[in-house]
Image 1 (cartoon, rainbow, N blue to C red):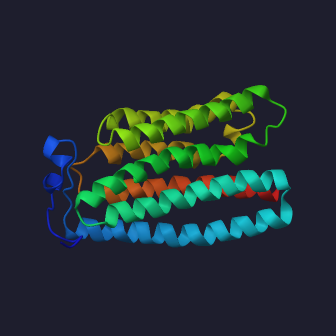
Image 2 (cartoon, rainbow, N blue to C red; image 1 turned 135 degrees about the vertical axis):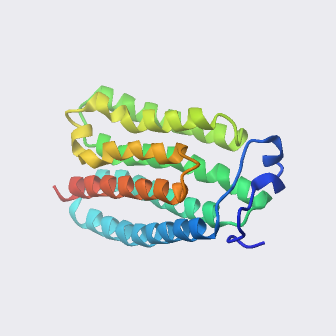
Amino acid sequence: MTVFRLKQFASTSAHAAAGAIRWNYDRAELIADGVVHGVGVLCGLIAATVLVVLTAVYATAFEVVGVSVYVAGLLAMLVLSAIYNLWPVSRAKWILRRFDHSAIYVLIAATYTPVIMQVKDSIFAVALLIGVWCVAIVGVVLKLALPGRYDRVAVGLYLAMGWSGIMLYDSAATALPAMALWYSFGVIFHAWQRLRFQNAIWHGFVLLGAACHYTAVLDLVLT
């Protein structure tokens, strides 16, 4: 069964039989999404290598820890997303789906880690970072244990975590480029499932946001 099979539905999987999941993209859409993911993984590997090297040269050991957490979260998200979205429809695909969606929680928390770690003298900042990671852990457990359920709630939770840095606006949110916050409106395309190339467009917004976050972390390392 090929990944380019036209109008392939997930009705062949156990979870889709319950009406929870559908995979309905034609050849052109799958190719477009594959290109987006390929570019994302390649650029992510290059960018992560550059960031790790620069951090080792210019940053302190404390900052190296935070950046390492961020890099691990970024690569996990990019790789798992590519594997899941390009995997042929099968039972294995819906197992991969759990890890793909879980990686989003990890990435959000990992992205905030080096940013909030810069606010060393704020107890509230430490509490926020702990809170973000606790929510991420809960989200991962729910995605792994209850796949295909509460997906709309999960999207809201992703956005809530992403915007939680507003509570530290003067020190954390201002470290992020404006586009890194506004890209979250790309979720409109995630929900607009009748739009052709919707999945590729949505993943393009994800890469755009990840690139903006990357520049913010890179700026923290170099300044």
